[in-house]
Image (tube, rainbow, N blue to C red; front, top):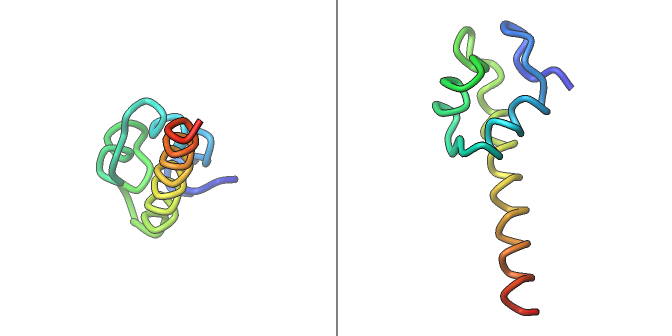
Length: 66
């Protein structure tokens, strides 16, 4: 799914940036350019980051219980 229309950045690219260590919309912007022009995609970028952190905390919680 295309997230940043200005720079043609899709959700997979943003997820890869987050997997590689980007922890904020600013860090994603620095890594791939998404969100650096009009800014209309910034809420979607924030949501992708939040979903990543939620999934990681679920994995960490599951590992701690097992």
